[in-house]
Image (cartoon, rainbow, N blue to C red; front, side):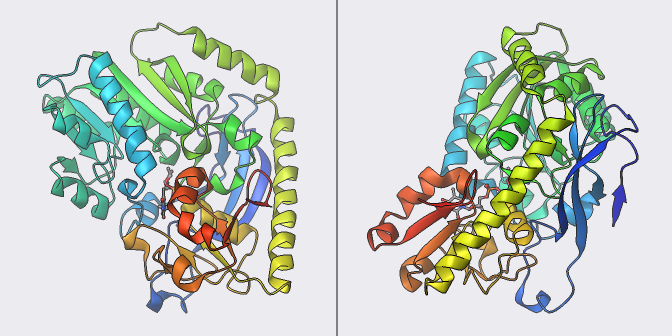
Length: 409
Ligand code: DWN
């Protein structure tokens, strides 16, 4: 089920301008089981628009969250050591900065498999995870992270508050862009946060996405693509203030936002707002230029892979990532080019990539089958993966990165 927006998701302006279409594609995390590959797959338009009024970049279609995140959602954060390290550092930093202790309360929205909250639990700090995906929620409970398996909403925030649950810290990593009811979600944060509390929110940064041409991070789960300009406007609409921001390298370039009920805006925020105005993130032309670069990558990547294939090379891919689905479907990279995809996430083994039906195997398959080249779909973890695959590379195996320019590494 899908709906097309008639107005901007943040400011309700009717004048959103389409800037990029990636076609009609299957759901990026909709990894298929063997008995599903012969049946028709749900596909939806994947088209991006820009709002000249508030600068929000957004999908024009909304796919039902129940279809995206519940049954069989295959993404488990704990399969990435780099993400676990990044999250632990964030948690320990917050414990120190906010003097958290057994009298504090930390809530994470989209808490997945407890990958982050477990660090607070280890320090005796009461926590609550909220995540609609059954598998990851069960995994979190299994390691002692209390988790509500449901979507976060303004209503849930009110219910929790009436149970006497208010948060000193609310963490929300890679979820704000995912929610259809953006205003309800942010309103819920305001409701659930203590007056002296802080919401610490990570989201991919639109400026990194465009500068490094990370178009494959566009998929139906990601409804919004945030600039600081759009975020600042969003929070102020709910009596919250974007008081501080950090730029992070994780997931191809992200923002860590510090949002509070009392205005105390850091120069780091005002500097980024000014840079965005000067560099064009508030103008449609910036995104029209991005769209033409995306088309160039598609052409270059197809040429590179077809050329290698015609020379007799065998090609595999690494990372059954959601971004990988966008890449192989927008660039139409099928089993004629890619023999298999490997991934460390055991929940993904035995499944098939959406749309192209490329089989997903364990990473050991690289040494077993020794493909000549491996397209790095999880390029955001390149350092970690290349280190991990040293043995394969020492046998002469070569990785190919698709963005910002397709090249053999
Ligand atoms: O927003 C989202 C981002 C943050 O995570 C979610 N909606 C879905 C997900 O997107 P993704 O699947 O593109 O994220 P990742 O974390 O970049 O996916 C990496 C994939 O690579 C995972 O399936 C795990 C796998 N992996 C691996 O096989 N070996 C990852 C590492 C680090 C490894 O060493």
